[in-house]
Image 1 (cartoon, helix red, strand yellow):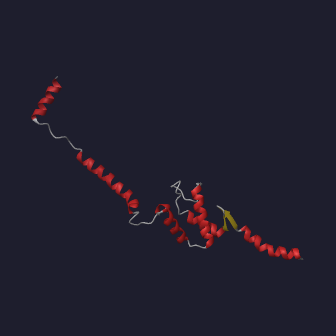
Image 2 (cartoon, rainbow, N blue to C red):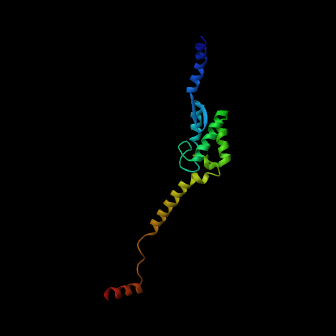
Image 3 (cartoon, rainbow, N blue to C red):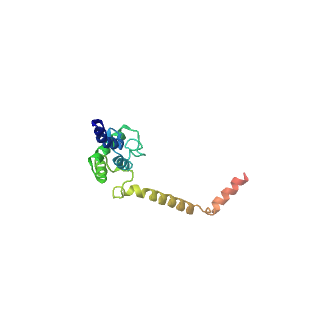
Length: 148
């Protein structure tokens, strides 16, 4: 009878344990893990620079994932976690930084490069035309060169 009661009490704990995930040294529920992955997907790996910390195998990315998961377990809101990372590592840590006076040139540079390239093409094309006609001295010199 005692074993039956013990098993009945242990059953909810086993069900909860199956929903738990341990990653980067932090144990959290599957819902918290999904939330942490979404946050990590918005942050740039400071070592790799072209992938999120969720996709990176760098040691620093693992440390950042651990910080995020610890804060998720503590119940810190997503926005606060992102603000913490920006405050600590700068706006560069965001894979998609918001448009601000600081990042305006980042977003404007492709458009400016296209405008400069098109202008160079347009003005370069316009200046190439028929050469000016030869004056009398140049025509005489050309005749001498051709007849030699």
